[in-house]
Image (cartoon, rainbow, N blue to C red; front, side):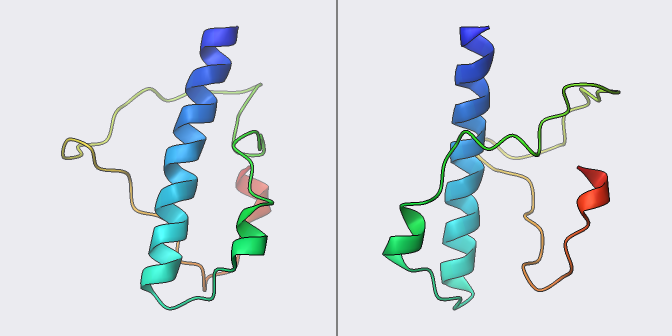
Amino acid sequence: MGLVLNCVVLWTTVYLDAAVRQLKAQGYPVRDEDMTHLSPFVNRHLGVHGAYNFALPDLAPDAVRDLRDPDTAEDDEEI
């Protein structure tokens, strides 16, 4: 279980970093005091019960999937 937790924390950290970089690049205000409240231990994106898809997207090495547009409404029903 520890290995799984470490993998999830690492994956979440990579995508949090990518999201913050994208927001900064698009000119959104990202304050340092807000950054201190980010945590890689969020779990809303984890599906503990349900169907799983292990098909890997075709990505270049060291690339991440496209991030959601911050200006679109968030659909909490998918989570």
